[in-house]
Image (cartoon, rainbow, N blue to C red; front, top):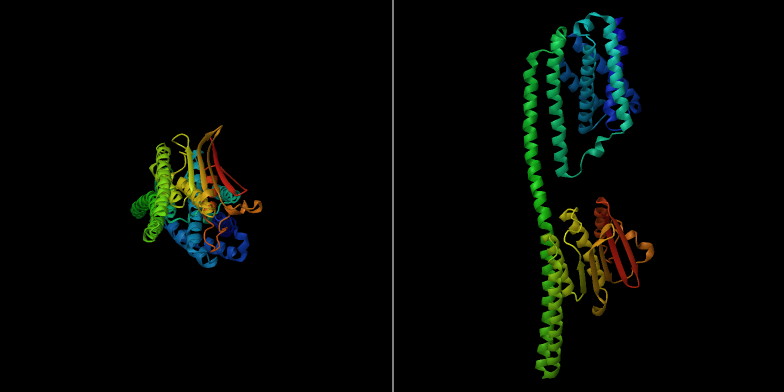
Length: 446
């Protein structure tokens, strides 16, 4: 009779609550799989009673129940390996935690193992108190609506960090489990058979193995971090070099055309026209030289070398494309709270869009104006360019990923990235376009 009462009033509800905790970490309920849940509860309860009947010591019993729980979840609920492992760890971990809490609570009231084992009332009281702790834990997990699937990072670098934290947490719980085992054994000598020392070596080896895994994962994580930093550092400079090469090719192409024209004048004996043509080229060269000198003076105030290189490469393209470029920078530490890699995304994409839009205009109408500085209560970046007017109904659509005005369908990423990065740092982005002038303004509160 006592066995049946314990089986249906303690063991089966325990299995159901542990399964509920396992499902709760994925924001699900076992009630949705009622038949499978009933089978799981019966198998779990039978396994627990069988191990107790065979007097299996506590620690190997826990390990056996952990393996059986994993197999039950894997095959009964057709769960994926990650989900089955997570649910098993959550369930068995909750069981160990609840048992320790109950024993420590009873010990604080001078109730020890001998009293629990020799008193039927205390056994049932401890059992129902244990179920109450599990029910409380299951309730809070359901209220929190946790879903581990959303917490697992998609980025490989962050996945290794997640694994480091997860395995480190498991190792910490194992160490806590061993220490608490000794504490409980010391205060509950009749439970000595459940906390035998002969199995401590096994857990110590497991902890050592997990430590080796943590060291290995940490090594991989450090290497990935170094590679990521190198990539983020190299990318802006490589992009600047590519922009400069593009500008050089454009200038080389223009120079070839000019030399061909001069050669044509000389062959035809049109020396006066050739002289006039050369004078125009000289005037243009002087203008370009003055623009370069002004640019150098402007960029001297930028402390970040990557940002300075970015501006130089974009201005070189403007010179090659015959685009008038006016840059005004106030101060030296604008947007200092933004990572260089993210800041390059903002400025680079806005500048590229401005160059592309201005190139549609006649040479005499091409211009880009950029201001970067402070105003009352905010830091701002303002960029304005000539080019096609964007219809008002499409001004917000340009920030959508995949939206592009290019006839070949390429692009549609730059402005979406700018908006994403800006909002991630708590900033605002505004756009205006009318009468052949388009402007973007990004601002952050001080």
